[in-house]
Image 1 (cartoon, helix red, strand yellow):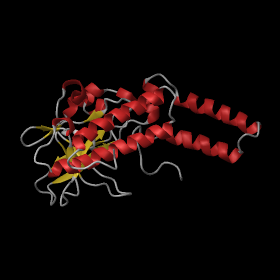
Image 2: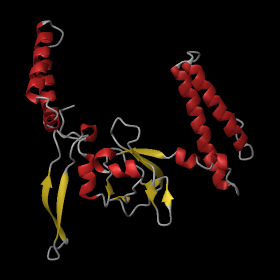
Image 3: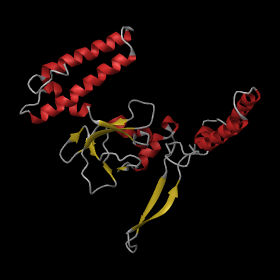
Length: 261
């Protein structure tokens, strides 16, 4: 299918590829093919879809069966937040909040994307976005630069979302910054106060788990392994220090300041 695909036959070949993908999934569930084989089939299928998108851009008419491929193939940007904590009304009521990059504004965003959060819930995603005319299923964002953070702003959520979110997924409150507008300031604003979000031990304490007891339990278990010769004393000390540092750390992902490795 992949070798014979062209701009004239892509619709029929798309249906053939879908059938082969489903056949491979069924064979995998029955134990007929291995995981590696299923991965190869899916890689070929998605490659076919990418090529079909290219053919459609040149075609005068876009078939209905393949019209949704651009959305299906959109990049997923993993954002360091919990949708259910910071914007639960998006999930519950399809409320749309403006989302835009807050830097690199002199560059054109060419990537069609959807946004997923760091929770364990498959519903933790944003795939409907405000547009000038209607609602779009993708958001144009910039290509990510390796080693650089990429910052997005979600606006108009207000304090109501924060209260509704409570401690969903046990992430707790996010970091907050109070921005004070001042016409006399050269930049028209200044950061009045920074309120750190919840730490791991604060969240655990609210759920009636004792961080001190957890550290103590871990230390007892590690000391036993040291006596048995399974780990070296220095490694044990490092593990306890790492665990303690986690307890005192932010519940969301941190890209720096955690350990030495």
